[in-house]
Image (cartoon, rainbow, N blue to C red; front, side, top):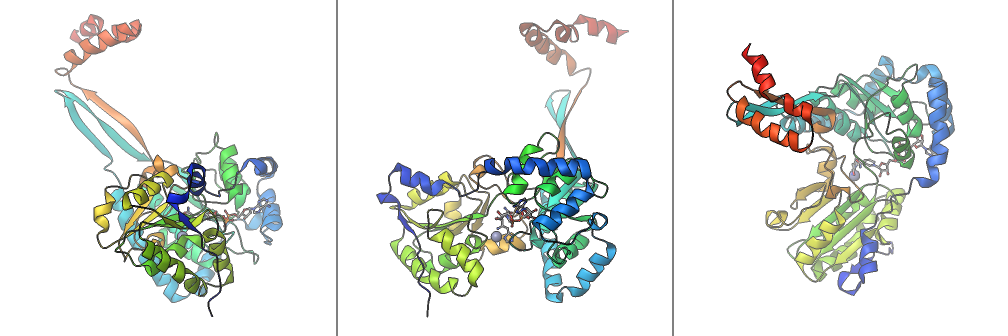
Length: 443
Ligand SMILES: NC(=O)c1ccc[n+]([C@@H]2O[C@H](COP(=O)([O-])OP(=O)(O)OC[C@H]3O[C@@H](n4cnc5c(N)ncnc54)[C@H](O)[C@@H]3O)[C@@H](O)[C@H]2O)c1
Ligand SMILES: N[C@H](CO)Cc1c[nH]c[nH+]1
Ligand SMILES: [Zn+2]
């Protein structure tokens, strides 16, 4: 027998502006109430280092970690590989290959230099940042996929010092697949610390944990709050909060397929957001009928998370009067993940302007993107896809502009620069491109 579940149907034509605005809001927890709790955690790690990390692991993760066992040992890696199911190992290897290929293709040439004007050359040079810490969450499950998504682009970019910070389990160990994925990728520094204390550890460095210039990866509000407080000391990277997705379905879509895919990101936690957005009443009805059937196959915890999300204003089915209206809703929402279910998904692609990731057609569910397709699954959440981009090799590189002007190319540039420098009142600037220079160069 199928369990009765409430699935919200939001008929956009019946909602006023406030109702529509409510649907666009995420449930992302405000970090304000926990900032005062995070400050002493940061201070303790700064002052006591590993001793504080071990204490917080015991307190928050209920994990028997000691100050001298913060780093995973070579034996920890070996044991994890022995314990890991061969099928999981093969799947990790497959995923590493796709993700490495995608990010290698994405990597820019080390330098480009174009002749902007005759004899005047300019371009960009890309270099890797020196170090990065990759945060891999563990509160609501293990995330070897986050290991791959955060460390592979770092390796491809050429970052020399890469480490992983992740909460230890109640057995005092790091998740097996996390260690195995790290080894496959070539990262051997994995530290047993999570939450705010992990961010502080990589920001300041401890006796064990290396200090890094940047931290990447998603995390709970404790992680987000620590990144916020330490942003002057460590680059906090792109924001990546609770997972969210929109399944955009036109009248050619199968509502049951839309239902199946809606349950992907809605099962992450009660703070996820997930909507089917469609102009087809039939797709909406079929999806609502199918959802409880699929939820019954998910297990209590995950079905519970999905129920919370889909029964409130952070999820469910949004019904619109037209497909253009559905597209407008998507662009206003700016989802982290977007799937387009249609017989002709490429026809709709050009209309989408705000989405972290756009997955096209019936054979490209978010699950493929999350694990094995290649593009990065650490994506801008909470509407930040309006201006931000997915995690990429560019997050691990910095750029210097390059310029070179020949003697023949110099005169027209100097003349125009002198005029502008004089207008701005910069005499020193102007002198440097005046006859004084010509005289010096003539000698
Ligand atoms: N965007 C993405 O790519 C992506 C991928 C995976 C997960 N996520 C999101 O990342 C988040 C992960 O959060 P999580 O909780 O699962 O794992 P987490 O590892 O980020 O947080 C758990 C840690 O928080 C700290 N903590 C918990 N309670 C505390 C307390 N009372 N006081 C101080 N510290 C405390 C502990 O140190 C604990 O180790 C979720 O919101 C999930 O949706 C996003
Ligand atoms: N959907 C997440 C990003 O929002 C990534 C992920 C990892 N594992 C499962 N899902
Ligand atoms: Zn996911």
